[in-house]
Amino acid sequence: MLGIAGKVIAITGASSGIGDATAMHLAEKGAILVLGARRSDRLEALCDTIASKGGTASHIVTDVTRRADVEALVALAIERYGRLDVLISNAGIAPISLLDDLRVEDWEAMIDVNVKGVLYGIAAALPVFRRQGFGHFINTISTAGIKIVPTMAVYAGSKNAVRTITEALRQEAGPLLRVTGISPGYVATDLPSSMTDKAIRAQGEASMQTMAIPASAIAEAIAFAIAQPPNVDVGEIVLRPTAQA
Ligand SMILES: NC(=O)c1ccc[n+]([C@@H]2O[C@H](COP(=O)([O-])OP(=O)(O)OC[C@H]3O[C@@H](n4cnc5c(N)ncnc54)[C@H](OP(=O)(O)O)[C@@H]3O)[C@@H](O)[C@H]2O)c1
Image (cartoon, rainbow, N blue to C red; front, side):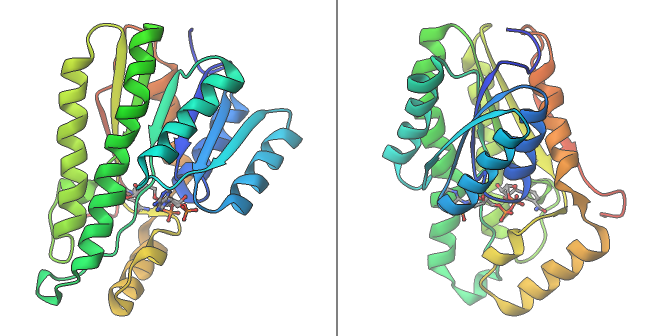
């Protein structure tokens, strides 16, 4: 299938920020959306908005730290729409801190959501894509893994794990599947709400207010990757505010 219209696209972390904006943008381009996150009220409202504009979207409560939930998201696409064209593994959290603070539970949460969540997506969709003979993985990474700064050790590490896994997946995928990593810089979203250190959260919110680009910019980059012809594989897109050093 060419372009975006008619493609069945599942998104994790679709209840806010980049996932929400991407769902709206792809729905406007005629994609069929299957949306996952933990907050069902937000997913329901997003599906209603998409439907009110003539689009098609379904949702299912998905905690990406639970493999069965991610399996169920992919299964919903197959049951309801007969196939899955694209899986966007986008769910992520950023409870960043200095390593000295030993916020070990936050480290574990970032590994569970940012890394294992993406792996569960691969585990759920890869057999489906192999069976179908087509499919596109899109993983949300971050510029945090490109320029490493203090407080970002575990977050950047989790994102660079995804960068590495995404590149290996691309190499193993063969000629029928596509694999894309999207690395945004500061984007205006709810991401600081996942920051458990109050001072760091305030800093994150301030940086967002001064320089963040809108989530729609990431949605357009994702749409660009999906819209390419089947033999064109967009490996990685990095996009950040011009003001971001
Ligand atoms: N904003 C930025 O500056 C920026 C920059 C680079 C990369 N990113 C990455 O972009 C992605 C999206 O983040 P965002 O900026 O759009 O932030 P956001 O507005 O906070 O959105 C994060 C999304 O992830 C979901 N999520 C969190 N934990 C989850 C879990 N256990 N299971 C399922 N979904 C979960 C949230 O939904 P629920 O709470 O409803 O589950 C929400 O929909 C993340 O991977 C983030 O690391 C963001």
